[in-house]
Image 1 (tube, rainbow, N blue to C red):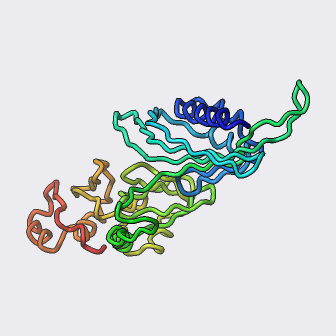
Image 2: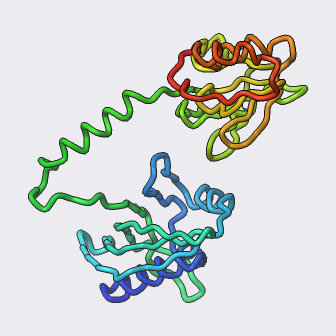
Image 3: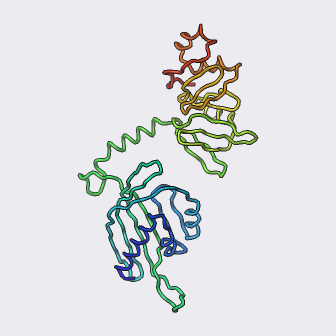
Amino acid sequence: MKKDDIIKLSLHIITEYYKNNLEPFFSYVSDDVLWLGPAKRQLIQGKKALKQAFALEKHSLTFTMGDIQVLYVSPHSHIREVLLHYDIFTHYPSGSTDVHNQWLHYTWCETKKETADGVRFLPEIVCLHISNVWPYDDRDTIYPVHYEHISAAMHATVETERYVFAKVPDGSVYRIALSRILYIATIKHSARLQIHTESGEIVITGTLSGFVRKYPDLFLRIHSGYLVNPAHVMKIRRFAVTMSDGTELPVPEKKYTQIKKLLLPEKESAAHGADAAKSESTVTAWAEKSV
């Protein structure tokens, strides 16, 4: 493996990859390749598993690469390490773009192969590691001496947020921030629920009764088929509540007065006591009320 050839091949693979052309990449990965992506849990071993993972990936993203810096190391006559450093711009269908400063680390190995021309040593990628670079304080050399304020801020955010844990049908578990959950609905004729969040829906196993027992202080049951997060109820009227995403959920007539008292602060309830028969009441200033 000549230095210039392996560098050109490394550059060709990544530039084609970000043109959404994966063929050069899969042409050179080893059957036992180890692929480490930039996000948590993105660890895949084996060419077959890697192909399966990419086959499931559907997206409409396009990419633009910035200038590429190349570092090269040859620790052994049959091993080459190539590191690429570049900016990658991700373009979303909405028209927005974000940028990551990225490292890509190839480990190349010459492997003996039987070819039509006889036995040859051909290059294969045995390990591929992609990582996104954090910004760094120029006052630091190795350790993040000046990052204490960032860590403290992140720590405080984690401690003040509450989370719900739920198992999905494939057996995996979701950890969902309470602040993102709007409401939870039963899926008829099944032992499953649909959690509606600010960014989409998640189907989980379980029942509303079981959810209430597990999280008795977080949600309000307004109907046999619905739990709501009070912080996302924007309006209550006879006989429904309106959520922050505009969804209207029914409230049974027999439970309406009780639900309204739980949602509205005491002063609101008093002010509207004489008008209880009115068709509509706006829920305000009660987001911190514990239900």
